Image (cartoon, rainbow, N blue to C red):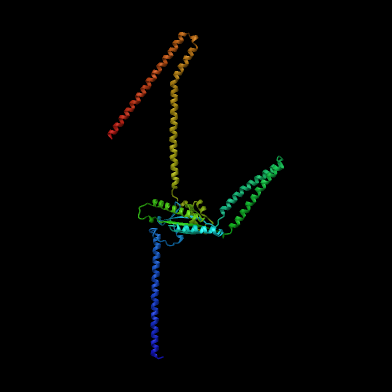
Length: 418
């Protein structure tokens, strides 16, 4: 091989290497541009979903988001988690699963078909959240101890009663045997309860006893309503109605698979978020103890609205009750005064009648002439009193009629002036 040929070959190799290097550089640049566009598009979709502008549910697509985003909340209100300053509302369903592995083949097929039906019936996005918790047996131990203490008290009382009956000699062998049988059952129950407490305490020492809680997260964006002018309270009510309807639809559809569910209330949502944020400390100091200790009262600056409404209603009820009691008492008092007045009016007539009877009974001693004149005198007095009463009643009626005419004239004058 001559020097010219070698030089020419090296030149070709150099150009080939330069060409390959240029191709590699171009490919690298294209890959970087494509990755940059992909990241930019994903970021735009995330921003759009975070702001709640998801568009029409019939035409838009949903991207997968982190389930832990529902914990970035502002507050909990009306069984909902409020996020993004009221631009997003979240409601949570707690589900109780089924043991799929222990089912027969037919039952497993029914569960699968029910789940397929559930997926096909979805018209809105959902998220599934699984929370692993350490089993807390403290409440169970407290309940067991309380029940066992009651059984122990009954046992000690029964033992004392049995000893007293046996020493008294007033009971037969059959009766003592029946009492001893009941005492033995109570003693066995007490020992069984103590064994349960011991086994439960040993189980509570094992921190590897875990329990899984299953939740379905549903979100709602008020921006789906479009450009409508609603205040925050109206938006909250609309979001609650929509989320509640969706949750009920999910619960009813899941029921065909054997999975039961319930909507978490505000306290349960607090516990869910508390367990998520304080997984290690939750077993030492749970959310129930925090609420009982009043850790949330530091943020309360006024009485609860419902308590204020109840207090106002109680005051209104008390005022109306006092008013009604006064009216009833006044009415009864007026009726009694009327009856007293009637008795006073009739008293003179009763006295005259009794005087007339006394005169008639003693007519033999008084003489017929004196007796008849006295009776005539009493009769005249009664007639005169009757005439006076009738005149008095007519005067009262006339006065009432004149007052009514004056009132009518005054009303007409006021209406005319107006």
